[in-house]
Length: 114
Length: 112
Image (cartoon, rainbow over the protein chains, first blue to last red):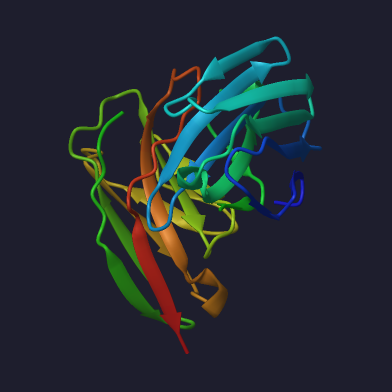
């Protein structure tokens, strides 16, 4: 969905490096999410945010941190990257006025940690 | 959230209707049925959702059985671009934190 953008689209980094993945949305939604997907598996929730001041851990938050700089921006950081964080990362948004049930996903960031 | 069961894979001829089944026998009264799809390595895409009644939009139709224990997603005229993994998800209507529980889904291959 072009309304949700992620940068970079691809990233190669080395073990121990700190990296940031960024997500921006123009849908005007208040809720934002970060998921990761490993090959052949479903999505796992890392962090979610209901608004700028409300950030919550998901299923697999260890080794990750987030920042909600504005309603439209939600960044994911890997404090010290490790190889098993190699995955496809997706950002998503939803609108609480509609119950927040329908999520709209960005195109994803493919991360390789060497 | 209730668990869903979907076939692992299915093929469909281009131009024909694709009927994707989903079983959710433990669904409760306040849970919606959602369908998403994921084209290879792209972000999941919302398709449709429903509670009790059948639903239709520009992408697909959703048929929910009267006992709500199963549903069928119908792509009326499948195209090659509909090749994707299709996920059936059951979610509680009052789920305030909005997490989506993706299972293995059905790999749909549309052939010429």
